[in-house]
Image (cartoon, rainbow, N blue to C red; front, side, top):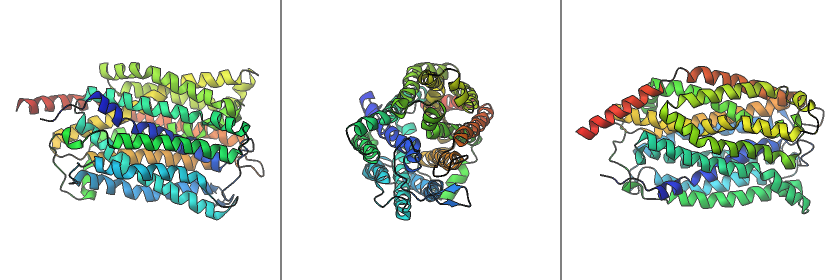
Length: 465
């Protein structure tokens, strides 16, 4: 019989989420802001201003291309991980080989070395963005697949994902504070370009350390029960995954919810600085308020999910997000009602979105782990990798849809020589609100209680044999 994973090793395994928070923050919160800058930012326009078909920006095209290439790696890595026969296990070897490429690729995205507006900068950014997404796949698909194997108890897993999310959102809050550190460096004499690059480099260095500590947190064979590797082909495994009704329903809801969250994260800095007119140097306070309150709400969300079910907090989150996105369209008018109090209005918005932030970051992966465990118990085959690949692919789709959508929508109403218009910023909120409303409808259809009841019954049967 395998040992239970000690808490200290569980915490160390979660350190990868610190790196994930930092790197995701760089890409989700600042990639567009860095390469599609406002006049206020002082950043140079490194990419060409050309648009495909008259409205698709270079940044949107690069992101779309990266996701197309990235989509191919998800099923490949999942299948390789599920069938891996490495002496160190099916999952941990992937983490150990992917950690350094993952960290190095994210920082190199922002070091495009050519002249302003050069097409070569677009090629540079596109290449390293693809490298970043690929390395992310090689690290996080096996890592996420390992969780149901090392933590078989569903209630304990919710606690694990709480810890994981604290680490992720805690590091995200530091990433949100990047504007403060950038402002300090600019005041010290650095140009806006090199101030941003310096901050990103420091966070990338922290991320490398966290990734390596996580990848070597424990030996997989000491904590994984005997498993049955799938024998069917990669395509067959995928078809079997999509026959799982609960997984399909929840994944669709998760996709819509994730897109609304990605829209918010991608455009949040524009909401704060353009709609509310909060200075860039103070914008981190709004983001920090959202993160801090969200972390305080973790115990409440975990308690609700254990007492009732996991979809209740997700439904509440979708309702709140839908209302907030509706109000974003009128953000500039709301700010005008209380001149001089723009920062307080922003802080209020941060507090309101804290619950959705917390629920959407903790619960989806926990729900998917429940579905994975249920499928393994019912069918007697461990397909954690394939399930995790689909979950990871959904996360990437959310990011891609947000990047492409926000990048192009932001340009609506932009003045000559600028890449962002006020009307475009407001429209991103409308689009995100539609996705949030769709997630609410789908989450209502998911049967969380049935999945967990099946797990409990089958685990008791296996323990009695």
